[in-house]
Image (cartoon, rainbow, N blue to C red; front, side, top):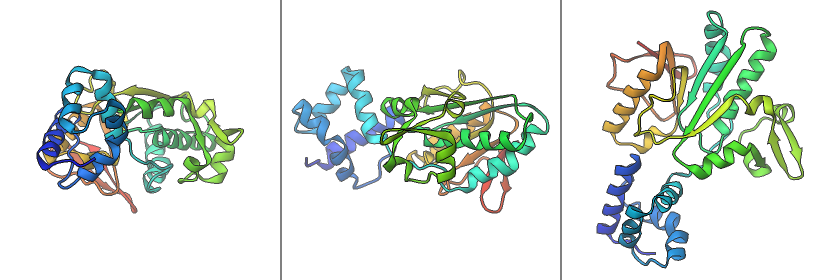
Length: 269
């Protein structure tokens, strides 16, 4: 499927308007590869036909956003955020309270929220009685990704991407050639569909927000808006964790940087 420059520009503007994702220049190949099957199924030859149909068909719009936003994900991605959670944040928070509220702001197919939940489980094993209630609210814009996450069933290929063998044996049960995550890890995660351009007021307040490897898709202006509104969801002294390639700049009145060696996190001012 060949995409002209004007058609690509029109689609890029539309995608940013509806979900905030900003496609870089010369990404026609990405649009072509991700939308090829949808275009073929609908017998459309050019992007404006698809855009016209999307304006009227919300289900198709969701499918296209799904196709453009579904990304690969890993268990315990970058490692150090989970070490910081286990060795610094959980001891600090449980020194003053027995409840824990975490928001995972781009949960994809569940690897990150379940990794967080396993860290909580490990902490509880080592520190009995320190935590009595824990909740992870996991949101994503992709319905199909959330459907996979809610099932909590993964194949060997998915588990080969970062899952330590000892945690696999401890927190999964094998079902044929697939693995089901245990209910004690799964039950504390609540999945909800959320476009990060929408309001966060219904989510509640959090001790920790993981917003990792998603801000890279937004413009600088939208990034600032999202980070300002995340600040509003954090409890006093709450923490924000970003992706390894993401940095927080331009919001000195909202967050202070905390060096963790390795890794940087941000505390609500």
